Length: 343
Image (cartoon, rainbow, N blue to C red; front, top):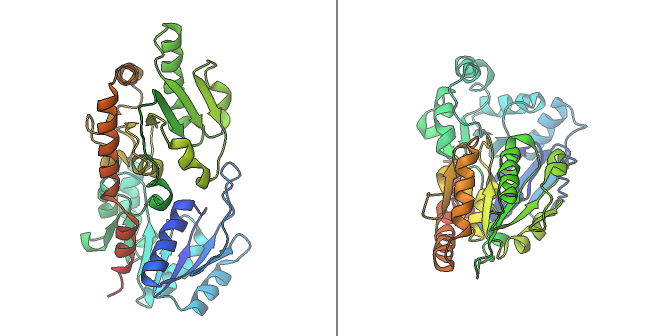
């Protein structure tokens, strides 16, 4: 089977999914992508079964012609914001080729989303036969956009289990670890506020490791228990997650958060928010982590104090539970879902 992928900024986990599918099913990929984000400059090259083209200089007509010459059995388009991609999507949808759009927006029920539902026949549905979403938080929105349950696919995002599965937590390192861009919506201001309060009251029982860079780097509290590692390549991250305590993602809003999947694959118990989409799939409170309301600093403080006093035995049980939770989405299910659209 031949698959054209019209992507925005390519990620390591998406490469892992295509690589697995090629190795298992023999599918061939042509991927057109936008230039990498300067704050996350992942570098990817073509490899067996996956031909990567830089698309920033291509016109809508160039993209359509390139896709037609490839003669795909399936077309995947990352969202519908990139207007140049829609011309190709419309062409293949009219030809009866399955055309899948990816969408990770949670259903919030706001005016903008309700209008998107009303306008979907013109703006979305005419281009795509299927919609692929990460999980339950996106399902209602996909339905409002007019896609039937048979044409709503789940499990869009899957972490690279090949590199994270090998990580284990052999001991309870009393630490919280954050991985991501240091930006406002990640909820770091609330986290830093809580940490400062714990320091001031001499109650900081945990080390803190902030992995990532961004505009909020200068706001990281200064303390002997706190360190910052700037941007790292995906291949280097597993080593940093070994014996790293609890993973924390304090996002004010996180459409999904593949990093949560990476964390549970590595056996890390997770602290995250109700506003983080991936929590719905990978975190059960008290079983393998904690979930709190993002703006609630008092609730977060209570959790950090609780895990600071957690026994090694309880920690390792939570770690094992995270490993089990990680299998809810896998490279195998990702591949099976993609292949299911071709009868």
